[in-house]
Length: 419
Ligand code: ATP
Ligand code: MG
Image (cartoon, rainbow, N blue to C red; front, side, top):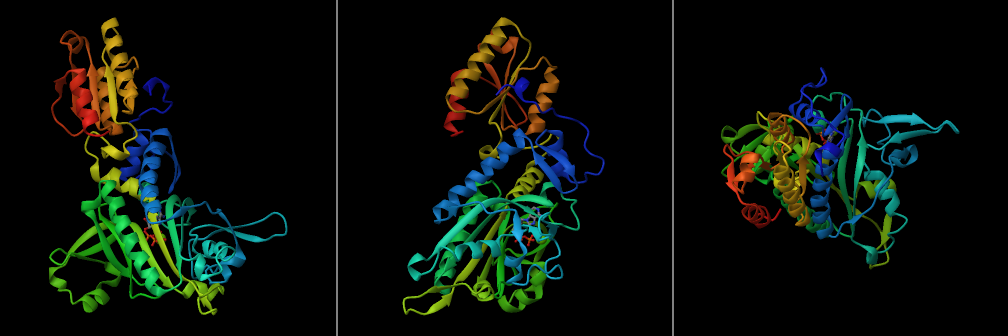
């Protein structure tokens, strides 16, 4: 894509009320637009990153047998009353409104645990239908009290939520472990695997602890206690319980700031019991489903990555979720420069490399600064000097020095890296 065709501009100014680094950078680089606190729109560059994150998650969800669907934002009161979670005392983040016709109260979905169960009851009747795993990428609406962490805590945010139902607790336990492994692969592929810990958190309905995926990050809102030797991570909220339960030495625990990037939950038969949902088992008896729920905060993960890898110059995207792989800059507009840039652009694009060509009539320094601010992993410059030397100037986003490469060497470098 040519930069002149991208409608978004970079800017040095950010909204005065924006405190978080991730949102500041994403706004400055033209990835997101701030509607209000905790509410962000995704512009073309931001959407490209989000779609790449989604695709990685989608592949891993499909690999464990998940079927993708899309539930609704508008929620009927009755479904949530079955579990008591319509009650604002129990769930304090509801957005609620009323239909014009009939004055009926409706809620805006902050989760889909109840609606999914309620939907499944129409399709799953027998042990032969089990197990079922479904997932979606869905906008959740939550009336969060505080929204100061940029896209890491939205009042409107994108979640991937997976749900599974099973005939027995052993089946659910097996699938639960598969999802833990799938989540590890996801965070590895997103470039934050090394910093992300499976963490013991406050309990599911059936299990003493639930599991969170916590990424070490200064901008996070949680505290993680880490026993590096035993590789056990515990959320502060269950610290004493976990210390007692697992015989941890409290003095050896490292206290670290972290962000919850995922959460998995074993409900046992609690939801099915509350909602009166059963299947017919082999012995012809009606039994409640075992239910698991598994979330990933897609937009939060994007914010965490923006925070963790950025530097003085701006964003630094890991290769596989960058909106473009390469920022191509022409300096000047002589016939030689124009032809060379055009041919490099065509060749790379034809080989599947995603190139953003800064073809604007702008100062070279501004072009360099923009490529850096946007966090594009590779940069190539074509100037009268490089044309004269029959070379290109190449630099990786986090590298200090540029090097001279021939077009063939550049192709080798990029294609070889599997971009
Ligand atoms: P938190 O403790 O951070 O409020 P939660 O326990 O409410 O999270 P869940 O309801 O389990 O979170 O949601 C699943 C995932 O969605 C979380 O692990 C997190 O990554 C993400 N998430 C939750 N709330 C938000 C939010 N307000 N903005 C962005 N992502 C969120
Ligand atoms: Mg919450």
